[in-house]
Image (cartoon, rainbow, N blue to C red; front, side, top):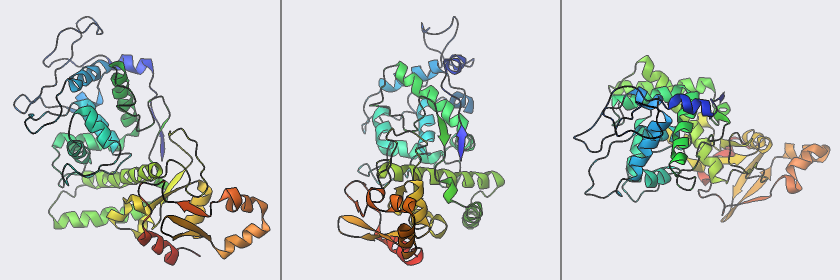
Amino acid sequence: MAVQTVRSTPELFRRRRHAPEGGTTIRDDPRLAPGEQLPIYHRGKSSRVPMSLSDHLDITIAQAEQQWLEIQSRQEPTENRGRINHTPVETLLAGAVRVVANVRSGGGDGRKFPFPVPELARLFRRKPNGVASKVENLSGVPGRNRGATSDIDLGRRLASDAKLVASTYRVVLAAARNVGIGTDRLPDFLGLEHGGFMVLLGQDEVDELDLQTAVEQEIGQRRLEALDTDSATERALMQMLRIGQSAFASEVLRNFGDACAFCGFTLGDGRRPSLLRAGHIKPWRDSNGRERLDVANGIAACPTHDAAFDTGLMTLDTASDHLTVRVSQRLLSAIDRNLATALHFTGDGLRQRIDLSLPEVAPADKYLSWHREQIFA
């Protein structure tokens, strides 16, 4: 599913500069219009100021700049540092992370988190687990996280409106650049800073009927646990599955360096859409919840090789340091008869082996075995 987003134009930013009325204010900022003021985002539990949806969704460039200045003035996280509430810019970026990474909190400070959680943690001067918790709390599904009602409401709004995610993301990034935060500290992890489309990846792999079945199973489990099962929760679960699939695809593409594992095709600029697919080795419909999000159950491929792998025209055999490509008899016959087919599946058109030194997470043999036994023709 591709959705055209609002482009990052000066008009958009000028429109967003005007802050809402009310709230504690700071000294006049020379960049503001006469009489315009910014709210302070307090530190510490005792001075907490509740954030509304408007504080996040109607954020202005000037407000975001002030929040970034506050973030940069923080001390590094220590055991003695008091609690610091998340500013809207942090929360909005945490919401955007859900599109490109499946994040789970917990597991201690030594646990490894997916990109861009460590990068945001360094920038926010928080522990990675704290950032991961915020990402998780924005799932929009109540009952299995510690998220406040405001996080649940915000998560649902963001999950249902790709244009809103893109436009607020661009405001937050533009403000960061204005105060000197470069791409080395805040990477453009959605690939939208300079325009383009907001894309939920991998949606064509998941059948609507399979999605509905998965939601019904989850609703049944929630009833057993006496958790919310209303229509809003059902819609949020559907969105959570779709976004989870997009995050899976993003992580798989990143794992293979944004290039086809079978032939090396790439556009090479890291932007979306990339013309690449990131499909499951063991299909989504046949996988459980954990397997659907497991990067080791995915492989990046160009459309031609993705279709051949998905339909069982070729498979992969496991060796110690590489994967060997094996094609079906049907495909071999087509190669002999058709020059165009031969161009895509012989010589430079198809690698005979895939070096496992490139992907950080190698495809797991349990998934490859399933593919060889259940799909390969």
